[in-house]
Length: 270
Ligand code: SF4
Image 1 (tube, helix red, strand yellow):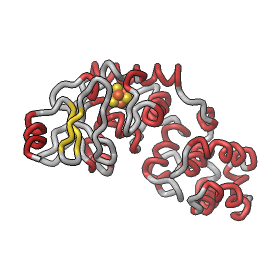
Image 2 (cartoon, rainbow, N blue to C red; image 1 turned 30 degrees about the vertical axis):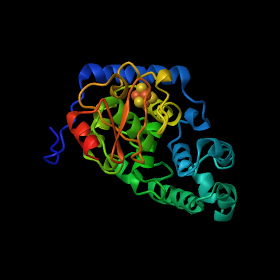
Image 3 (tube, helix red, strand yellow; image 1 turned 90 degrees about the vertical axis):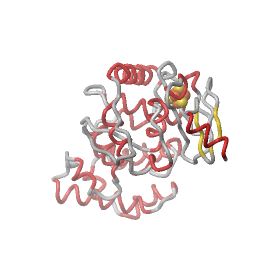
Image 4 (tube, rainbow, N blue to C red; image 1 turned 180 degrees about the vertical axis):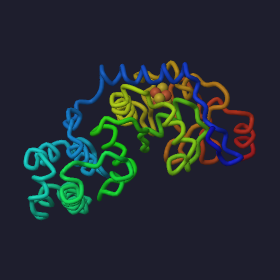
């Protein structure tokens, strides 16, 4: 079993919950997932382009730029042959201007060191320009169709709420409990649809300030809604959020749902 700090309880997901959680997300994604241009991709290169363009930018703004990008440079060799000015002319209007240089450098490294194919290990992907831990894992999962646990802010929010993982601000940074939880929940198969569904849930249903629990495929199993001991959760800003059918109590800068005795004590003494 993974070892944690003494005050960190280990995460141990019930197998029945895990199966239900996975099934609900996959079925919901196949029925109601967003139609985004990068969803039909099979090329790891094009997935890498989409991940770099999506950094710090909304999907709706990225979509037309991405479509033009892959139409002009459909392969990594095409991108390598383009000039930096040509690439920046297309990507700079999205802001975050470093992206053009990252894309050009990524193309150079992939062509010169990897024979024109993106590397097929997570460690090597992480060394490419513009691909941090999340983007590298996304290329691994969505481009190479390999199994790995994806974790970004949206996914962290869904997981912590659904499982009722006692969370604080640090859970959204480098938290081993959360990484372990994410790893335990990834299905052995269907992990592509599972991760796409998780991201759509976080972006459109399990919103930070106003989760739409009545529309959520997890509502019958989500601990933030069904309650149970002990459930406490926060949004990224540490602000109380009110899931439907729950009562939120402000505890300092935190919110406790179905508060534990400790939470009530803190609330009453604050
Ligand atoms: S039921 Fe509500 S809190 Fe739970 S995962 Fe769905 S939207 Fe989020």
